[in-house]
Image (cartoon, rainbow, N blue to C red; front, side, top):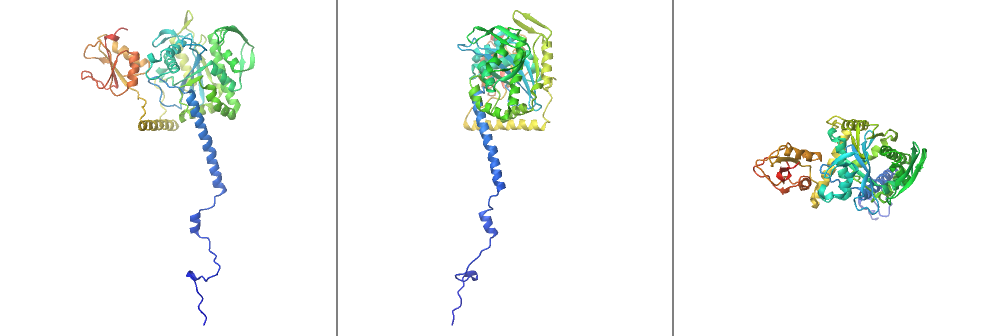
Length: 499
């Protein structure tokens, strides 16, 4: 009798061949094989991320080399895509200078509108007479020099000479142009010395300039304080960095007004060269920037801020270089002026009219209250992004135990010297340099020593005020006899009563 055939579970006999079908369960465990399309997206992602990371690494290297702090107490806190103002300061720094020889040789206000790709230049002659805080009346180019020599007297905190020089130059330019009355500021400052300018032009491969007439200067100043003869023929010509610098600085063949015009022409030529050379040349220049500009250029523009980068890129690609508006404080633009020695005193009404033309040409409003852009969705988004980034940085700094930047303090001044108009005068003096002031009042009693009460924790601003209005800084609450909701309260004593 034959034994029954032994079967395994599921009816399979020993030695039989088993063919298993593909199951969805196996596919789920193993996963689908990679497709060409998915691999393509991975490479695209890497192709975007790697250059982006490299870009920001290089941008941070540039920022470390050239970005300076703005010591002004009311410095701007965000980038306005609708427009911002940059003060370009060309500095005469020569070997062996101990400070007294460092001065601003060029002052150009640059109004930029990134969204519309508009730009407007306004040159201010260096012989323009102005009031310089801490120094008194003098030529406008002395503002940088005085700030450079007195950083600790003018600004609180750890301030470099270059930062102090730029800041005081910006304060002075705001005063002579009156742009505050329209709600605008010198938002950023950029300082470039002669060596840096020449190196930048050479890095571009030179620039093309159309010289309008023959120029001969028999007394062009040299770096060793001597003179030499220079000559430029009329017509279109290619210039090296050194030649472009000489062309922009020479003035003995005509005057300072002609020189201002040549400086604007050179700025326009540099922008034209950058546009014509294309993106690859710009990338090459970008990579060389830390070596080219380190030690020769300083700027308060936040180059590592994504919003600032977006604004500069938008300006560069939207800008029509030929349409850059150019203005100068000169006899052909301001008819009424006075010459006192070598100083020039401009008619305020003429300056006001010129500044308004300069603003309008860049798409800025000249009403007392600038038009709100809060309804602009894109601008609002950029503003919110900047605020979010600032808040994240603040939180990170707090967690790490770093000090935070103070918010802008409200200040109220009280007259404790019984001198008519003293509190108002001091309040106006502080407002003129950017402090936010409340309506002044009278102290309940006579005091001899000025006291600056830091009520709500603004030590940097209190220290800054003490440099302008000498007094004793006291941190803590106000005495019961003085009622104020301000962050900093100043009770001016008889020690500051003299005008």
